[in-house]
Image (cartoon, rainbow, N blue to C red; front, side, top):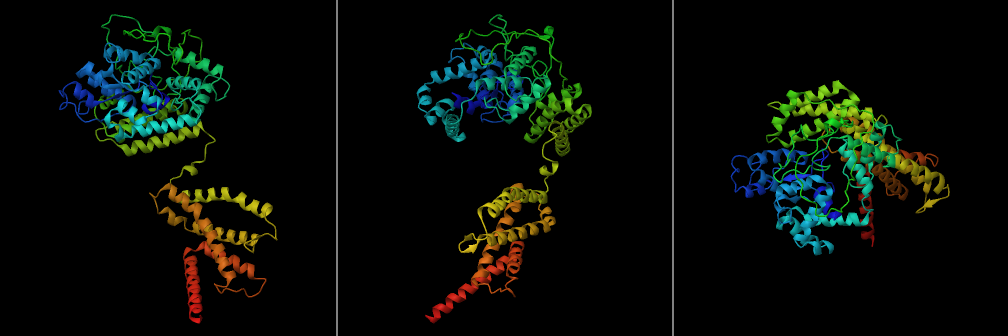
Length: 556
């Protein structure tokens, strides 16, 4: 079951604003409405699948579809942990799609129940137990499953889950609560990774708790209390039982959605009088004894420190944003809008009003008739860098993030130095003595000539940094590898050049015995420094060996 959940929704049934994860399928909506809206809104009603906005933006598409045909719109979206389509509601025993949607909003347990009901109803239990992923994928996602390699994704997820520690449900609870409170712990996967630890430290600091980076009892209790302070939403709490014809609360508008703020790190503390219970009917639970994934929180309204809130968007800008989001947008523009909004929620507590106003200017540039994407991106990157410097004062210096090809080559050199400095010292001081020989040659002499070749390679790189700077646009990895491997190549060239000189193939003889070592060091340095010299030397050596072979053949 974990395998299916991780492939469908990465194991989480709710967005950070506590609305269920959905995906609106325009081809299903077209089919359910007999194509009535295909010409009018092809991005919502189309015989071909696609047009996804992704993430929370799918609710905007769903809201527009609801205005056209509400039942068909609800049937055309997949819901929750298992992404079960709304049009299966009746077959799975939910009575109506409205009741199905209400149940999916209630909890992850309800979503898991829908997934289990779908698997059982469609006869997929045997295939799932046998790990017959192709059969399961065909029954779960339809005959076109192979196009998206759904069976392979299931097999890979199962292998990963079966060879690693299972997800820790208590960690996952803490991750979900952090996510709902706006602390961005990453994917709620039950693993205490770096993103989760960073979010946890930030929460503990805000709550004046010991910074343990673990979900200890005090931290979990604080998380539960803080979530209890949030207004009730469509994703939690008990429902008020009204008439069977009670309206379905999908989708809530941005003003109604309970969100801790896009990317906000602060907690908004509400007053008891502002808590509103959802006013829709929920069908009876099929398994009332099922324990909640996130245990119920009693709203006792304990005293808690009021955290600074993110600055809200100016009304005119918010209205302009809502209007633009209701229309199809370029994917690059969508992505940049999302990044600016997320960053805006983070900078308010750390950088203050000037940074927020600058990001509002970025939003204005993006929402203009002719969006200025370049200005918004460059400004956003500068503010993000300043924020990171403020939050993580000990992070690597900006020079390590440089986009300069020359600096990337120098990083490669530094990496090589870190890797090899200790190895050379160990070989010279511990593993070898003056009498140690390798293939009949003094080991320390080989170390010396190899080091001379490597130093020649380093000097060659440092003298050509200006040339590297002209290679703007080259791959960062390729530049890093240049800096790392050029000295390594120089070292090997020096060792083989030394072997050719000692063998007599290259007739370079020192003037005196005392100057022999200096000659070898000089030649080995030059072989590492100059690729052209090394190539010429090896070509001449090859020609010499060929002539020797020809002479021997003639004499025989």
